[in-house]
Image 1 (cartoon, rainbow, N blue to C red):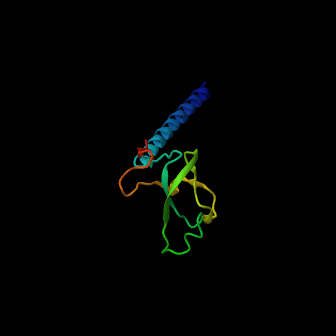
Image 2 (cartoon, rainbow, N blue to C red):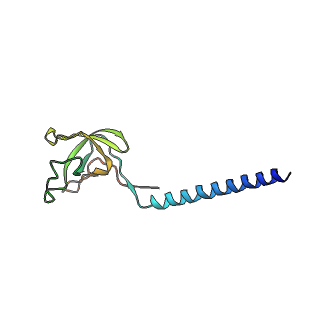
Image 3 (tube, one colour):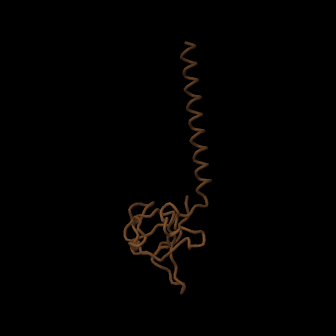
Length: 122
């Protein structure tokens, strides 16, 4: 009889520990995502591209060269993290670009492109 009580007690401790871990993980995720902004692009939107040395080695030979270029048109949305961009063939890189290297383009006359506004994470 005592062994079954002890087994039930251990199971109860495991359940409480699991609930506490899940609760803390949820709080941590909410805290980390509080200030993140997610931008979703649609085909036809204009974007700036950030040149990284590993993806654009010819455009980042020197630290004095521009770090970004644009505007470029979004051709296709692969998923929320990747987009096909209308890049010139002179860049010699793949047209699929990670969303972290993209930012919305706004023209000088303050007329927005067709990009969606920033959406708060949460």
